[in-house]
Structures are given as C-alpha cells and as structure tokens.
Length: 61
Image (cartoon, rainbow, N blue to C red):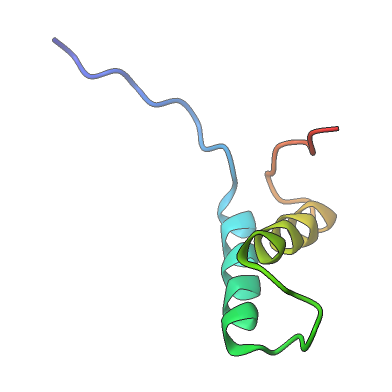
C-alpha cells in the first residue's frame, strides 16, 4: 500500500526560526519580564513571523 502524502507545511521555515529565537531568549532570560512562559514565547515568535510576512496560519479569533 503506498504511503499517504502529508500535504504542505503548516508553518514556513522563517516562522520556525522566529519561534526558535524567541525560545532561546526565553531560556536565557534575555527579555527580562517580557516572556513569562513557553507558550508566550511561541506566540511572540509567531506574531513576529506574521509581521515579516512568513507563512503562518491566521490567528484563531
């Protein structure tokens, strides 16, 4: 039986790199009190990626 193709990427590579840098800042405590949790770091990274025009799904309302 042939393997099912997994479709396209949900997030672009630029979005992944933005999230990666925000996570690094969170772990190194570089933003002071700006980032409190892991979820918040991911949200900030995705938001920055959206502003730069990276491939990121729309925000859920």
